[in-house]
Amino acid sequence: MREKLTNPEHVRTWPGSIPVEYVYTAGVAGEAYLRAIKERGRLAASACLGCGTKYLPPRLYCERCFEKTGEPRDVEARGTVETFTVAHRDLEGRQLEPPVVYAFVRIDGTAGGLVHRLGEVDPGDVHIGLEVEAVFLPPAQRTGSILDIAHFRPVRHRPAAT
Image (cartoon, rainbow, N blue to C red; front, side, top):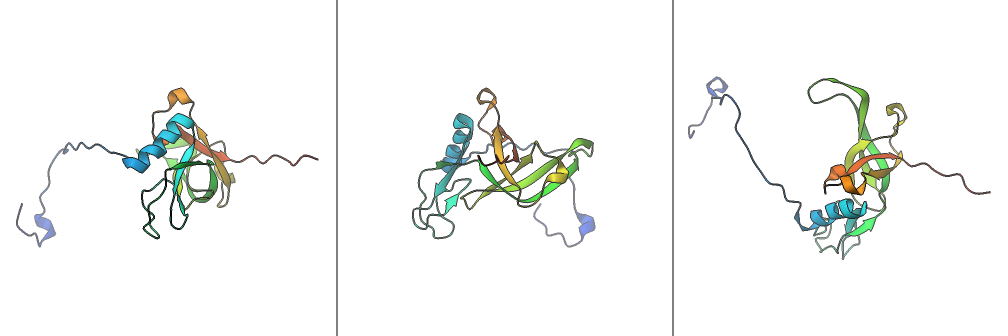
């Protein structure tokens, strides 16, 4: 199709589906990150060797000063909800019971975060600023995917000893 279409009524369609296959590679930094999740049930961040900014997920180069980053190191799997949404329907439009809460969680001490599910919390109790921690699948169930994090749950603060 080499001709330029100027009238939207002349657009052609392809009935049916076009099979598309691809292979996603996580890259060097992404592999270390996914290995930390799978093998240790931890999150890993890389730190810039120039300015010290910690990136999660890890990166090979700093996006602020363009210096290399060091090897990914484990960080606490805790953070703060920066924004969230409550899904009442699935991708096919079916009612979800209970609703699913998705949130962007800024991971403590890093310049990054993750969009993931929240669990062990009533949707009405979720708010911006909620402190959460990752809940990992049991080691035997992990496959090296972001879904090895089952969900994030609210941090349960322990009362101070008296």
